[in-house]
Amino acid sequence: MLLIDGERARSVPLGSEETVTAAKVIANIGPKLLFSQIIGEQHLEPKFPRSVRGFRIGPGIVIDPTMN
Image 1 (cartoon, helix red, strand yellow):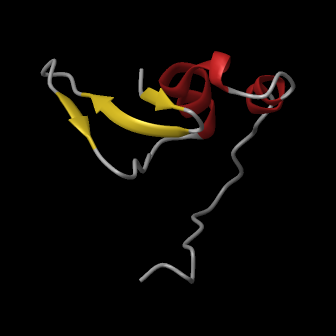
Image 2 (cartoon, one colour):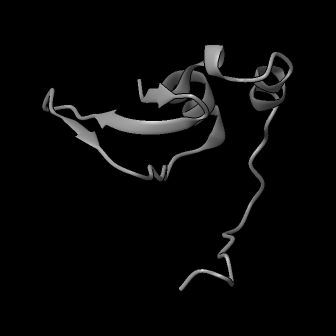
């Protein structure tokens, strides 16, 4: 699991048992995995995990036009 400090992720454990600490952490995984297994429901607002469990992914690819 991520190391959560307040409302921010501060470090990420790697499969090699090394931990990487950073000012910002970006995830490239789906919301179900991110919020239920990586962040952990104990860090979320009480009603949010139920919303995440009901999340459905639609067809297609979305590219954020604001990304540089």
